Image (tube, rainbow, N blue to C red):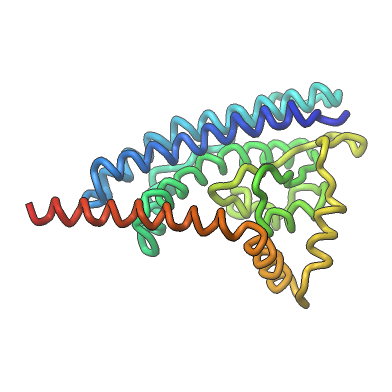
Length: 250
C-alpha cells in the first residue's frame, strides 16, 4: 500500500501549521514585550509548546494508526510521546539567546520542540511495533535532510534516537518520518535511491564534505531567495533593537 501524495501532503500541511503557529506566537510575544524578562518569555513559551506539541503528537499518532490499519497491521493504538518539559523549553530559548536575539530564530527553537513531539511519537511507536521508518523530504529540502532521506527504510536504533528523542529535528523544515509495516508499502514520490545518488555524487571524501558541497550547490541555485530571507531577518532584528533602545532611554 502506497500513501498517495495528496494524503501525505495533507498530513504534512497540518503538522507544519502547528509548528509554524507556535513559532509565530513567540515572535509576536517578543515583538510586543521585548527580551528584558526572559523568564516571562519561557513561561509563555512553555504554555505554547504544551498546547501545540500535544497537537503535533496527537496528529502523528492518528496518522500512525491510519497507516497501520491500511496495511493490515494488528497493533495497539499509538501512544503519544512525552511532551517537552519546562526545563526543555528554558534550555532551548536560553541556548538560542546565546547566539541570536532574532525573534524568528527564538520562535524557530520553539517550533522545533513542537515538531519533535510528533517525530518522537512516530519513532517511539515504530520501535514498539518493530515497524520501519524513513525520513521523507517535503518542500524546500536542505542538504542534510536529503542525506537522511537517502538512508531509506530502516528500524529504530540508538542512532535514530538519543535520550528518548528523535535525532536531527530542526526548525523551518517540513520533512518528517513515515512508517510502514511491510516492505511493499511506502509514500508516493519518496525515492531513497535518488536521494542517495545526490549525496553519493556530491564532491567530498566524507559525509561532512559532501553535505557542505550539497549546501553550496543549493545556495547557488537559490541565492536570491536566501539573501532576501536574511535581509528580512536582519531588518526585524534591527527594528527590535531600536525599539528596546527607545524604551531604555524613556
